[in-house]
Length: 212
Image: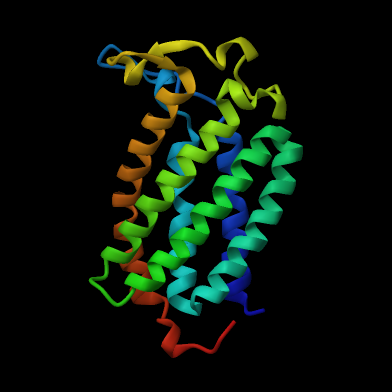
C-alpha cells in the first residue's frame, strides 16, 4: 500500500466519521427569519469532502482502488460511528455511504475523459441524491425507528411536522432536513471544484502511476 493510498483511506474514514457525528446536530441559526435548524445539519458541510477524496483516488489510481478506499473507509467509519454516534446512525450512514460512493466511482470513471469539471460534479450530484434519501430516510423517518433511538433529536420529534425549508407546506422534520441538506451538498460540491482543479494539477492521472 503506497503512502498516498493510505492517506486516501485515512481521509475517507475521517470525513465520514466526522459527518456521522455532525449530522446529529441541527444548525442553530436564524437567517432572514428562517430557522435553519429545520433545514440543515452540520454534516451537510463536511460530507461532500468524501466525494472529493473518492474522485481524486479514482483519477490517480483508477476505479478498483477507489472502491477499495470506499470499502475500507466504510468499515472504519461504521465501526467508529457505532461508538461515537449511535447504531442507527451507523446503519443509515453505512448503507447510504456505500451505495452513493460506489455510484460516484462508476459515474466518475465513465465521464473522466470529458471536460475536467463534468465527472466530479455529475458523479457527486447523483451520489449526494442517493446518499441523502437513504440516510435521512433510515436515520430519521419514524418507519425505521425500530433501528435505534437516541439520534440527537428527541424520539417524539422524528415525525414532528415543520414547514418545508421553513416556507413550504408542513412535512416531517427529516424531509425538510433532507432537502436542505441536499441543496447545501450541491453548493459545496460546486465550491469543491476549485480544490479539485488545483489538486488534479498536482496529483498525476492514473496513466502516470502504477496500480495500487
